[in-house]
Length: 272
Figure 1 (spheres, rainbow, N blue to C red):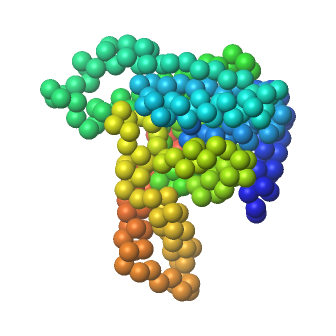
Figure 2 (figure 1 turned 180 degrees about the vertical axis):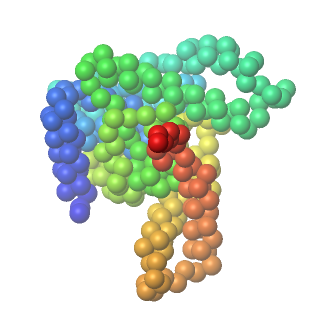
């Protein structure tokens, strides 16, 4: 499937879903990254009212600038469809941090677990904001996670950016998302930007956190699927030392995040 065909297929899928469920508004959080840029464009392609929401929380200026660039591009190309909302959630987050911080600190200086918890709280605050807007406008929250991050290694915040109603690019590899961005003609700065979740003040990228690039993750993901399918050892799967090491790393990342991708465990009560 070409990028043009993929865009047509996904935008049609979104519109079909919305029509079936009598949904008139699509709400997307935009970050200036390739995923949210493509998803917001896919939503706008449907012709349905699309609200794009910019929600900086102590955001690095370059990230916030790209979010504004993304919003500007959408308004230029889909002026009759797109509504842009921008709200700085820093004061809300700061109040939350000040209130709960003393109850979370276990050491004099914030440890890695506490820092990660607060980073995830940023994502959850944004999720709450998107749902407030979506429900107020009779709409749904559209997810921006791709196949590699959300359904491969679980690189998202549970009940944060993972809290969505539909996932239009959930079956698209990261490289395919980039290709759709080029097909749309998105600003080159957005396409070239190093992917980041924007949850850390030190500006760390996805690759910094995962320890693997997206092409490496995609190769490891493909090798993992091949090996899982080859239960009878009939496929000629011969991985080199580097590929085997990347596959091991991929599986380790996936294993520690698998709880996000599986249904919530339920204690079953069996009656006699």
